[in-house]
Image (tube, rainbow, N blue to C red; front, side, top):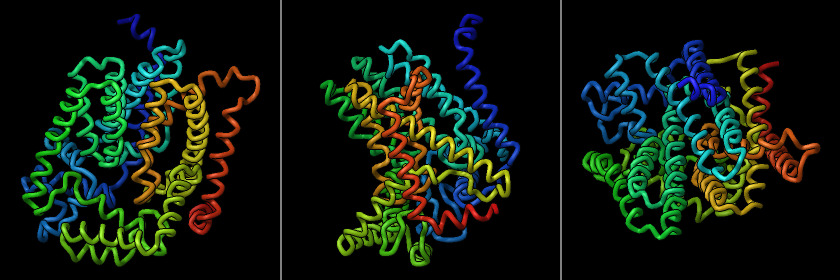
Length: 441
Protein backbone atom coordinates (compact mmCIF):
# COMPACT_ATOMS: atom_id res chain seq x y z
CA UNK A 1 0.00 0.00 0.00
CA UNK A 2 2.86 2.36 0.88
CA UNK A 3 4.43 1.64 -2.49
CA UNK A 4 1.12 2.42 -4.24
CA UNK A 5 0.92 5.86 -2.60
CA UNK A 6 4.54 6.54 -3.42
CA UNK A 7 4.08 5.70 -7.10
CA UNK A 8 0.83 7.65 -7.40
CA UNK A 9 1.42 10.59 -5.07
CA UNK A 10 0.87 13.21 -7.81
CA UNK A 11 -2.41 11.60 -8.85
CA UNK A 12 -3.53 11.38 -5.23
CA UNK A 13 -2.66 15.05 -4.72
CA UNK A 14 -4.67 16.00 -7.83
CA UNK A 15 -7.73 14.00 -6.79
CA UNK A 16 -7.56 15.17 -3.18
CA UNK A 17 -7.13 18.75 -4.35
CA UNK A 18 -10.12 18.43 -6.69
CA UNK A 19 -12.30 17.07 -3.88
CA UNK A 20 -11.22 19.74 -1.37
CA UNK A 21 -11.48 22.60 -3.88
CA UNK A 22 -15.03 21.59 -4.79
CA UNK A 23 -15.99 21.11 -1.16
CA UNK A 24 -14.45 24.42 -0.06
CA UNK A 25 -16.21 26.30 -2.86
CA UNK A 26 -19.55 24.73 -1.93
CA UNK A 27 -19.33 25.44 1.78
CA UNK A 28 -17.89 28.93 1.35
CA UNK A 29 -20.47 30.30 -1.09
CA UNK A 30 -23.49 28.16 -0.07
CA UNK A 31 -25.14 29.08 -3.36
CA UNK A 32 -28.89 29.58 -3.09
CA UNK A 33 -31.18 27.67 -5.41
CA UNK A 34 -32.45 29.46 -8.50
CA UNK A 35 -34.17 28.56 -11.78
CA UNK A 36 -33.04 25.04 -12.81
CA UNK A 37 -31.54 24.18 -9.41
CA UNK A 38 -34.76 25.15 -7.66
CA UNK A 39 -36.74 23.06 -10.13
CA UNK A 40 -34.54 19.98 -9.58
CA UNK A 41 -34.89 20.46 -5.84
CA UNK A 42 -38.69 20.68 -6.04
CA UNK A 43 -38.88 17.56 -8.22
CA UNK A 44 -36.64 15.62 -5.81
CA UNK A 45 -38.77 16.64 -2.84
CA UNK A 46 -41.95 15.57 -4.64
CA UNK A 47 -40.40 12.20 -5.48
CA UNK A 48 -39.56 11.36 -1.87
CA UNK A 49 -42.94 12.72 -0.71
CA UNK A 50 -44.68 10.21 -2.98
CA UNK A 51 -46.05 12.85 -5.37
CA UNK A 52 -44.16 11.52 -8.38
CA UNK A 53 -41.92 13.30 -10.85
CA UNK A 54 -43.50 16.74 -10.61
CA UNK A 55 -42.26 20.27 -10.11
CA UNK A 56 -45.50 21.87 -8.94
CA UNK A 57 -48.53 20.26 -7.32
CA UNK A 58 -50.83 23.18 -8.02
CA UNK A 59 -52.06 22.19 -11.46
CA UNK A 60 -52.57 19.51 -14.07
CA UNK A 61 -49.54 17.26 -14.59
CA UNK A 62 -49.98 17.71 -18.36
CA UNK A 63 -48.80 21.32 -17.90
CA UNK A 64 -46.23 20.64 -15.21
CA UNK A 65 -42.73 21.83 -16.10
CA UNK A 66 -40.91 18.82 -14.68
CA UNK A 67 -40.89 16.92 -17.96
CA UNK A 68 -39.32 19.93 -19.71
CA UNK A 69 -36.35 19.83 -17.33
CA UNK A 70 -33.22 17.86 -18.17
CA UNK A 71 -33.38 14.51 -16.43
CA UNK A 72 -34.56 12.41 -14.76
CA UNK A 73 -31.35 10.81 -13.41
CA UNK A 74 -30.14 13.84 -11.47
CA UNK A 75 -33.51 14.47 -9.84
CA UNK A 76 -33.73 10.85 -8.67
CA UNK A 77 -30.13 11.00 -7.42
CA UNK A 78 -30.99 14.16 -5.51
CA UNK A 79 -34.07 12.46 -4.08
CA UNK A 80 -31.91 9.52 -3.01
CA UNK A 81 -29.57 11.85 -1.15
CA UNK A 82 -32.50 13.53 0.63
CA UNK A 83 -33.98 10.16 1.50
CA UNK A 84 -30.74 8.82 3.00
CA UNK A 85 -29.19 11.92 4.57
CA UNK A 86 -32.22 14.15 5.04
CA UNK A 87 -32.94 17.44 3.37
CA UNK A 88 -29.39 18.76 3.64
CA UNK A 89 -27.57 20.42 0.75
CA UNK A 90 -24.28 19.67 2.50
CA UNK A 91 -24.65 15.97 1.71
CA UNK A 92 -25.20 16.81 -1.96
CA UNK A 93 -22.14 19.06 -2.01
CA UNK A 94 -19.99 16.28 -0.56
CA UNK A 95 -21.38 13.79 -3.07
CA UNK A 96 -20.72 16.14 -5.99
CA UNK A 97 -17.20 16.95 -4.76
CA UNK A 98 -16.53 13.21 -4.67
CA UNK A 99 -17.99 12.78 -8.17
CA UNK A 100 -15.80 15.61 -9.46
CA UNK A 101 -12.67 13.92 -8.09
CA UNK A 102 -13.75 10.50 -9.40
CA UNK A 103 -14.35 11.99 -12.85
CA UNK A 104 -10.79 13.32 -12.90
CA UNK A 105 -9.61 9.83 -11.94
CA UNK A 106 -11.62 8.27 -14.78
CA UNK A 107 -10.03 10.72 -17.17
CA UNK A 108 -6.61 9.62 -15.91
CA UNK A 109 -7.47 5.95 -16.48
CA UNK A 110 -8.88 6.71 -19.94
CA UNK A 111 -5.64 8.41 -20.96
CA UNK A 112 -3.66 5.33 -19.89
CA UNK A 113 -5.82 3.28 -22.27
CA UNK A 114 -5.63 5.71 -25.19
CA UNK A 115 -1.87 6.25 -24.91
CA UNK A 116 -0.96 2.71 -23.83
CA UNK A 117 1.88 2.59 -26.41
CA UNK A 118 3.23 6.01 -25.44
CA UNK A 119 6.08 5.97 -22.92
CA UNK A 120 4.80 9.27 -21.51
CA UNK A 121 1.26 8.03 -21.03
CA UNK A 122 1.28 8.61 -17.27
CA UNK A 123 2.41 12.21 -17.65
CA UNK A 124 -0.27 12.82 -20.29
CA UNK A 125 -2.86 11.27 -17.96
CA UNK A 126 -1.76 13.42 -15.01
CA UNK A 127 -1.88 16.59 -17.10
CA UNK A 128 -5.37 15.81 -18.42
CA UNK A 129 -6.66 14.91 -14.95
CA UNK A 130 -5.13 18.05 -13.46
CA UNK A 131 -6.63 20.33 -16.10
CA UNK A 132 -10.07 18.83 -15.50
CA UNK A 133 -9.74 18.70 -11.71
CA UNK A 134 -8.89 22.38 -11.26
CA UNK A 135 -10.85 23.92 -14.11
CA UNK A 136 -12.68 26.84 -12.41
CA UNK A 137 -15.99 26.33 -14.22
CA UNK A 138 -16.21 22.67 -13.19
CA UNK A 139 -15.41 23.44 -9.56
CA UNK A 140 -18.08 26.13 -9.56
CA UNK A 141 -20.78 23.93 -11.12
CA UNK A 142 -20.06 21.15 -8.60
CA UNK A 143 -21.11 23.59 -5.87
CA UNK A 144 -24.58 23.96 -7.41
CA UNK A 145 -27.57 21.64 -7.53
CA UNK A 146 -27.13 21.21 -11.28
CA UNK A 147 -26.97 18.14 -13.52
CA UNK A 148 -23.50 18.73 -14.95
CA UNK A 149 -21.32 17.10 -12.27
CA UNK A 150 -23.26 13.82 -12.28
CA UNK A 151 -23.53 13.98 -16.06
CA UNK A 152 -19.79 14.43 -16.56
CA UNK A 153 -19.11 11.49 -14.27
CA UNK A 154 -21.20 9.18 -16.46
CA UNK A 155 -19.83 10.69 -19.67
CA UNK A 156 -16.23 10.06 -18.56
CA UNK A 157 -17.19 6.59 -17.34
CA UNK A 158 -18.59 6.02 -20.83
CA UNK A 159 -15.31 7.15 -22.41
CA UNK A 160 -13.34 4.87 -20.11
CA UNK A 161 -15.46 1.78 -20.89
CA UNK A 162 -15.47 2.68 -24.60
CA UNK A 163 -11.66 2.62 -24.82
CA UNK A 164 -11.47 -0.37 -22.48
CA UNK A 165 -13.72 -2.27 -24.89
CA UNK A 166 -11.58 -1.04 -27.79
CA UNK A 167 -8.61 -2.86 -26.24
CA UNK A 168 -10.60 -5.95 -25.24
CA UNK A 169 -13.40 -6.43 -27.82
CA UNK A 170 -13.81 -10.11 -26.93
CA UNK A 171 -15.14 -9.28 -23.47
CA UNK A 172 -18.88 -9.18 -24.15
CA UNK A 173 -19.61 -8.06 -20.59
CA UNK A 174 -18.01 -4.74 -21.49
CA UNK A 175 -20.65 -4.34 -24.22
CA UNK A 176 -23.35 -4.74 -21.55
CA UNK A 177 -21.59 -2.20 -19.35
CA UNK A 178 -21.29 0.20 -22.29
CA UNK A 179 -25.04 0.00 -22.98
CA UNK A 180 -25.88 0.54 -19.28
CA UNK A 181 -23.55 3.49 -18.80
CA UNK A 182 -24.56 5.05 -22.11
CA UNK A 183 -28.22 4.84 -21.09
CA UNK A 184 -27.58 6.41 -17.69
CA UNK A 185 -25.53 9.21 -19.26
CA UNK A 186 -28.38 10.01 -21.66
CA UNK A 187 -30.88 9.99 -18.77
CA UNK A 188 -28.64 12.56 -17.09
CA UNK A 189 -28.46 14.82 -20.17
CA UNK A 190 -29.71 13.66 -23.61
CA UNK A 191 -27.04 15.37 -25.83
CA UNK A 192 -24.62 12.51 -25.16
CA UNK A 193 -26.94 10.35 -27.28
CA UNK A 194 -25.33 11.88 -30.36
CA UNK A 195 -22.17 9.90 -29.65
CA UNK A 196 -24.10 6.77 -30.67
CA UNK A 197 -22.70 6.70 -34.26
CA UNK A 198 -19.13 6.53 -32.91
CA UNK A 199 -20.00 3.76 -30.46
CA UNK A 200 -21.90 1.75 -33.07
CA UNK A 201 -19.06 2.19 -35.56
CA UNK A 202 -16.62 0.68 -33.04
CA UNK A 203 -18.69 -2.52 -32.91
CA UNK A 204 -19.19 -2.50 -36.69
CA UNK A 205 -15.49 -2.03 -37.46
CA UNK A 206 -14.59 -5.02 -35.30
CA UNK A 207 -17.55 -7.04 -36.64
CA UNK A 208 -18.89 -7.60 -33.14
CA UNK A 209 -22.58 -8.01 -34.00
CA UNK A 210 -23.68 -9.90 -30.87
CA UNK A 211 -21.99 -7.45 -28.47
CA UNK A 212 -23.60 -4.60 -30.44
CA UNK A 213 -27.02 -6.25 -30.06
CA UNK A 214 -26.42 -6.74 -26.32
CA UNK A 215 -25.34 -3.12 -25.94
CA UNK A 216 -28.47 -1.83 -27.71
CA UNK A 217 -30.76 -4.17 -25.76
CA UNK A 218 -29.38 -2.94 -22.44
CA UNK A 219 -29.68 0.66 -23.67
CA UNK A 220 -33.33 -0.01 -24.54
CA UNK A 221 -33.99 -1.59 -21.13
CA UNK A 222 -32.51 1.44 -19.36
CA UNK A 223 -34.92 3.74 -21.19
CA UNK A 224 -37.96 1.47 -21.02
CA UNK A 225 -39.30 2.42 -17.53
CA UNK A 226 -38.97 6.17 -18.15
CA UNK A 227 -40.46 5.92 -21.64
CA UNK A 228 -43.41 3.84 -20.42
CA UNK A 229 -44.03 6.24 -17.54
CA UNK A 230 -44.07 9.23 -19.91
CA UNK A 231 -46.40 7.50 -22.35
CA UNK A 232 -48.86 6.58 -19.58
CA UNK A 233 -48.70 10.13 -18.21
CA UNK A 234 -48.71 12.21 -21.39
CA UNK A 235 -49.93 9.83 -24.08
CA UNK A 236 -46.76 10.41 -26.10
CA UNK A 237 -43.50 8.51 -26.54
CA UNK A 238 -40.85 10.68 -24.86
CA UNK A 239 -37.74 8.67 -23.92
CA UNK A 240 -35.76 11.88 -23.36
CA UNK A 241 -38.40 14.14 -21.83
CA UNK A 242 -39.60 17.30 -23.55
CA UNK A 243 -36.66 19.70 -23.14
CA UNK A 244 -35.11 18.89 -26.52
CA UNK A 245 -37.98 19.94 -28.78
CA UNK A 246 -38.46 23.23 -26.95
CA UNK A 247 -34.77 24.12 -27.46
CA UNK A 248 -35.18 23.81 -31.24
CA UNK A 249 -37.75 26.60 -31.09
CA UNK A 250 -35.95 28.77 -28.52
CA UNK A 251 -32.73 28.74 -30.51
CA UNK A 252 -34.25 29.19 -33.96
CA UNK A 253 -36.63 32.06 -34.56
CA UNK A 254 -36.55 35.10 -36.83
CA UNK A 255 -34.36 37.71 -35.16
CA UNK A 256 -32.86 35.31 -32.60
CA UNK A 257 -29.22 35.01 -31.55
CA UNK A 258 -28.96 31.22 -31.14
CA UNK A 259 -28.65 31.40 -27.37
CA UNK A 260 -31.01 30.13 -24.69
CA UNK A 261 -32.96 33.33 -24.48
CA UNK A 262 -36.71 32.50 -24.52
CA UNK A 263 -38.91 35.32 -25.75
CA UNK A 264 -42.31 36.29 -24.27
CA UNK A 265 -44.12 34.36 -27.00
CA UNK A 266 -42.18 31.21 -26.04
CA UNK A 267 -43.02 31.65 -22.37
CA UNK A 268 -46.70 32.42 -23.00
CA UNK A 269 -47.19 29.34 -25.15
CA UNK A 270 -45.30 27.10 -22.72
CA UNK A 271 -47.32 28.34 -19.75
CA UNK A 272 -50.72 27.92 -21.42
CA UNK A 273 -50.33 24.58 -23.19
CA UNK A 274 -49.78 20.97 -22.27
CA UNK A 275 -46.41 19.29 -22.75
CA UNK A 276 -47.60 17.34 -25.76
CA UNK A 277 -48.69 20.56 -27.46
CA UNK A 278 -45.40 22.30 -26.61
CA UNK A 279 -43.47 19.42 -28.16
CA UNK A 280 -45.41 19.46 -31.42
CA UNK A 281 -45.53 23.26 -31.69
CA UNK A 282 -41.78 23.56 -31.06
CA UNK A 283 -40.95 21.23 -33.94
CA UNK A 284 -43.58 22.86 -36.15
CA UNK A 285 -42.05 26.28 -35.52
CA UNK A 286 -38.54 24.93 -36.12
CA UNK A 287 -39.53 23.37 -39.45
CA UNK A 288 -41.35 26.55 -40.42
CA UNK A 289 -38.23 28.59 -39.61
CA UNK A 290 -36.07 26.27 -41.74
CA UNK A 291 -38.45 26.59 -44.64
CA UNK A 292 -38.96 30.35 -44.48
CA UNK A 293 -35.52 31.49 -43.26
CA UNK A 294 -32.94 28.88 -44.34
CA UNK A 295 -30.09 31.38 -44.61
CA UNK A 296 -30.86 32.85 -41.20
CA UNK A 297 -30.70 29.32 -39.77
CA UNK A 298 -27.26 28.88 -41.34
CA UNK A 299 -26.22 32.22 -39.84
CA UNK A 300 -27.44 31.18 -36.38
CA UNK A 301 -25.66 27.85 -36.71
CA UNK A 302 -22.41 29.64 -37.56
CA UNK A 303 -22.92 31.98 -34.61
CA UNK A 304 -23.46 29.01 -32.30
CA UNK A 305 -20.22 27.41 -33.49
CA UNK A 306 -18.35 30.65 -32.81
CA UNK A 307 -19.92 31.06 -29.36
CA UNK A 308 -19.38 27.42 -28.43
CA UNK A 309 -15.61 27.69 -28.89
CA UNK A 310 -15.27 31.30 -27.78
CA UNK A 311 -12.74 32.14 -25.07
CA UNK A 312 -14.74 35.34 -24.53
CA UNK A 313 -17.54 33.40 -22.81
CA UNK A 314 -16.21 32.45 -19.38
CA UNK A 315 -18.39 31.28 -16.53
CA UNK A 316 -18.80 33.42 -13.45
CA UNK A 317 -21.82 35.58 -14.25
CA UNK A 318 -24.03 33.73 -11.78
CA UNK A 319 -26.17 35.69 -9.35
CA UNK A 320 -24.33 34.67 -6.16
CA UNK A 321 -21.18 36.73 -6.83
CA UNK A 322 -20.50 40.41 -7.40
CA UNK A 323 -17.65 42.88 -7.40
CA UNK A 324 -13.99 41.95 -7.28
CA UNK A 325 -14.70 38.30 -6.41
CA UNK A 326 -16.78 37.85 -9.52
CA UNK A 327 -14.22 39.68 -11.65
CA UNK A 328 -11.45 37.37 -10.40
CA UNK A 329 -13.53 34.29 -11.18
CA UNK A 330 -14.41 35.54 -14.66
CA UNK A 331 -10.72 36.25 -15.30
CA UNK A 332 -9.62 32.79 -14.08
CA UNK A 333 -12.34 31.13 -16.17
CA UNK A 334 -11.31 33.06 -19.28
CA UNK A 335 -7.63 32.23 -18.72
CA UNK A 336 -8.44 28.54 -18.23
CA UNK A 337 -10.48 28.49 -21.45
CA UNK A 338 -7.62 30.11 -23.40
CA UNK A 339 -5.18 27.47 -22.17
CA UNK A 340 -7.61 24.58 -22.68
CA UNK A 341 -8.79 25.57 -26.16
CA UNK A 342 -5.39 26.48 -27.61
CA UNK A 343 -3.50 23.47 -26.28
CA UNK A 344 -6.32 21.04 -27.03
CA UNK A 345 -6.55 22.27 -30.62
CA UNK A 346 -2.78 21.87 -30.91
CA UNK A 347 -3.14 18.32 -29.59
CA UNK A 348 -6.03 17.59 -31.94
CA UNK A 349 -4.01 18.76 -34.96
CA UNK A 350 -1.08 16.62 -33.82
CA UNK A 351 -3.38 13.61 -33.34
CA UNK A 352 -4.99 14.13 -36.75
CA UNK A 353 -1.60 14.15 -38.44
CA UNK A 354 -0.54 10.87 -36.77
CA UNK A 355 -3.60 8.89 -37.98
CA UNK A 356 -3.45 6.54 -34.98
CA UNK A 357 -6.66 4.51 -34.52
CA UNK A 358 -7.38 5.33 -30.88
CA UNK A 359 -6.72 9.00 -31.50
CA UNK A 360 -9.06 8.88 -34.50
CA UNK A 361 -11.83 7.63 -32.22
CA UNK A 362 -11.00 10.38 -29.73
CA UNK A 363 -11.27 12.93 -32.54
CA UNK A 364 -14.59 11.43 -33.65
CA UNK A 365 -16.03 11.66 -30.13
CA UNK A 366 -14.89 15.29 -29.96
CA UNK A 367 -16.46 16.16 -33.32
CA UNK A 368 -19.81 14.51 -32.56
CA UNK A 369 -20.12 15.95 -29.04
CA UNK A 370 -21.25 19.51 -29.90
CA UNK A 371 -23.29 18.82 -33.06
CA UNK A 372 -26.75 19.01 -31.47
CA UNK A 373 -25.81 22.27 -29.72
CA UNK A 374 -24.94 23.81 -33.08
CA UNK A 375 -28.55 23.45 -34.27
CA UNK A 376 -30.42 24.21 -31.02
CA UNK A 377 -29.15 26.59 -28.32
CA UNK A 378 -25.70 27.41 -27.01
CA UNK A 379 -24.72 28.31 -23.45
CA UNK A 380 -21.30 28.21 -21.81
CA UNK A 381 -22.18 25.31 -19.52
CA UNK A 382 -23.56 23.32 -22.46
CA UNK A 383 -20.01 22.81 -23.69
CA UNK A 384 -18.88 21.05 -20.48
CA UNK A 385 -19.32 17.65 -22.15
CA UNK A 386 -16.43 18.41 -24.50
CA UNK A 387 -14.06 19.55 -21.72
CA UNK A 388 -12.84 16.04 -20.73
CA UNK A 389 -11.98 15.34 -24.38
CA UNK A 390 -10.24 18.70 -24.75
CA UNK A 391 -8.32 18.04 -21.51
CA UNK A 392 -6.99 14.79 -23.00
CA UNK A 393 -5.82 16.55 -26.17
CA UNK A 394 -4.32 19.39 -24.10
CA UNK A 395 -2.39 16.92 -21.93
CA UNK A 396 -1.22 15.11 -25.06
CA UNK A 397 0.13 18.36 -26.49
CA UNK A 398 1.55 19.76 -23.25
CA UNK A 399 3.63 16.70 -22.43
CA UNK A 400 6.47 17.81 -24.68
CA UNK A 401 5.69 21.51 -24.87
CA UNK A 402 8.15 22.53 -22.17
CA UNK A 403 11.02 20.91 -24.13
CA UNK A 404 10.42 22.92 -27.28
CA UNK A 405 13.01 25.56 -27.95
CA UNK A 406 10.48 27.41 -30.06
CA UNK A 407 6.77 27.13 -30.58
CA UNK A 408 6.11 24.30 -33.00
CA UNK A 409 4.00 24.21 -36.14
CA UNK A 410 0.84 23.14 -34.27
CA UNK A 411 0.81 25.88 -31.65
CA UNK A 412 0.59 28.97 -33.84
CA UNK A 413 -2.30 27.75 -36.03
CA UNK A 414 -4.20 26.72 -32.87
CA UNK A 415 -3.52 30.04 -31.14
CA UNK A 416 -4.53 32.08 -34.19
CA UNK A 417 -7.78 30.14 -34.68
CA UNK A 418 -8.84 30.30 -31.02
CA UNK A 419 -7.88 33.94 -30.45
CA UNK A 420 -9.45 35.06 -33.74
CA UNK A 421 -12.66 33.20 -32.93
CA UNK A 422 -12.82 34.82 -29.47
CA UNK A 423 -12.21 38.28 -30.96
CA UNK A 424 -14.90 37.68 -33.58
CA UNK A 425 -17.40 36.67 -30.90
CA UNK A 426 -16.46 39.77 -28.91
CA UNK A 427 -17.17 42.02 -31.90
CA UNK A 428 -20.41 40.30 -32.90
CA UNK A 429 -21.82 40.35 -29.36
CA UNK A 430 -20.22 43.58 -28.18
CA UNK A 431 -23.36 45.07 -26.63
CA UNK A 432 -23.84 42.04 -24.42
CA UNK A 433 -20.17 41.93 -23.40
CA UNK A 434 -20.08 45.68 -22.75
CA UNK A 435 -23.08 45.42 -20.43
CA UNK A 436 -21.35 42.76 -18.33
CA UNK A 437 -17.74 43.92 -18.32
CA UNK A 438 -18.36 47.62 -17.66
CA UNK A 439 -20.35 46.88 -14.52
CA UNK A 440 -16.98 46.34 -12.81
CA UNK A 441 -15.80 49.88 -13.60
